[in-house]
Image (cartoon, rainbow, N blue to C red):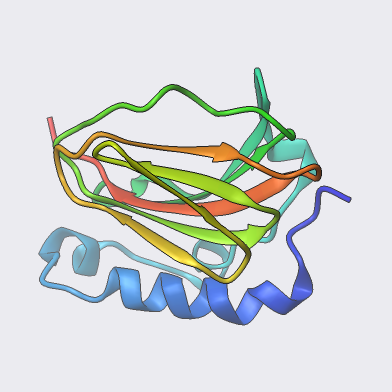
Length: 144
């Protein structure tokens, strides 16, 4: 099943609330409604990738570049090779087994584990299990 597990809704809500706290005046100036602040997983809105799919709960335009995305990756696959970028990034494992790569080191982790990638660190995540890997990605994109 591709749906977002019901048991994770409270986590997503808490992560979303914690992630949105800050001094972002332009976000406070927006007119948010209950309709624009609730995003339920919908298979019609998934974005297919070469190794699975992704679903944006909050894209770059929703809240000043701050994003929450769910990625799903097939067994033995990676979304992309290890890479680096100026933004830091969090992963939260929802389902499956992940291999996390950070600056030359690797670790295997299971669900309910968070992973932090400091800015400009070489990092990557792969599915190290035999079932689909699902994880949240929390990141703030630089404004251009």
